[in-house]
Length: 217
Ligand code: MG
Image 1 (spheres, rainbow, N blue to C red):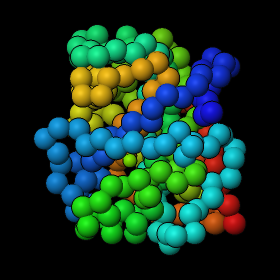
Image 2 (image 1 turned 30 degrees about the vertical axis):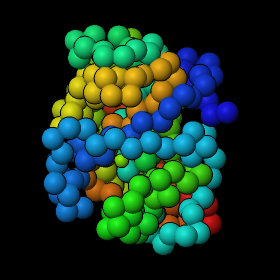
Image 3 (image 1 turned 180 degrees about the horizontal axis):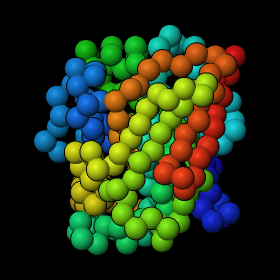
């Protein structure tokens, strides 16, 4: 059973929703158009690894990319949540990685097949401890960063999201319904790139929380 940390407590994870193409510059770097409504995919909860666990790359890919993202933890579920009420449903905010086997995703996109093998392998989802929502006054004004081996690789600013946090929650709750314990990966900014064995990935969410993972050799 996958769990995440909030206020030193374990919270059992329900669903893992992810938003794709939520930053224009990242959509452009992969040659994708931006979407008229949020692009949603899911990861199995078995793809989550805890902080400090080695990040193992799947043997079937030779091009696994980091995607550093703001992650939401839903505290109170609901259907048809109005954007104006959306933030009341968030229990916490964290920083995480949507690891992506880009070569496998490329084949899936070409064939019109689902992305699960590219996005759902064991270790494809990492997330830091969650900062309680009370400590974040506006999630649409947060900066975050990823360093690889000490070198800046991705800089995020949630002001640049195409679908801001309340719009994402409204959309997911309307189409799928949201439950307590759901995680939402909100999309990655530009700067995605391949990782290799031995790389150290250091993630930080605006001085609120940080976490690190190393790629297994
Ligand atoms: Mg992503």
